[in-house]
Length: 249
Image 1: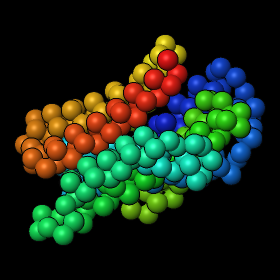
Image 2 (image 1 turned 180 degrees about the vertical axis):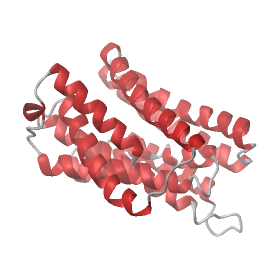
Image 3 (image 1 turned 60 degrees about the horizontal axis):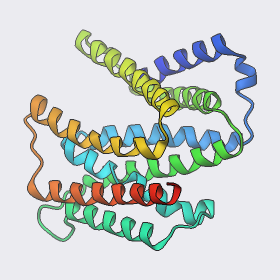
């Protein structure tokens, strides 16, 4: 909730400084913008919940499925043609997920399905973002809707369980809010200089940082099968990117 409060203030200030807020709020697909924003809140909330039960590396390994989920959803929801090579990559990504989850074995953690649910939310979010962008909504419109609706939705659920954070928690909430906005702006700036397909592999560097930070701050070390499953998912995603480059190159 605090993160969305800061994000909403930033979005209003940015859009107000560079243009008209009322004009920016005009959307070709306002209903889709609403559900896109709700999915954004849901993905963040569900992923945060998964971190109660899973290590950073394990949770991010399952979240890394989202590009492959978006590919699988693109065919029925967007009517896009998904070739057999992409479908094969999606299948391998599913196998990688099963390696991490290991259903039917004693090591299976039902809590891992929480992180996988976050990946599905993020996959749907990407599909709807593609739809509203194709309809003509600008980046500022997408950002403003996400900030304002996300702020409203998170406040509805956050206020009833609010408690006064400690000074250390206020510091962590401040860092979370600022780095969230900064990361978003850096991504936008990167997209000005390089195509999305070139930047996509950097999404998987999240796993490296998650593993490193988990080890440093929480003494977490993912087990062998989590690393194997993560490798399969990453290889599947990079294969899809390579196919896209070959077709556009």
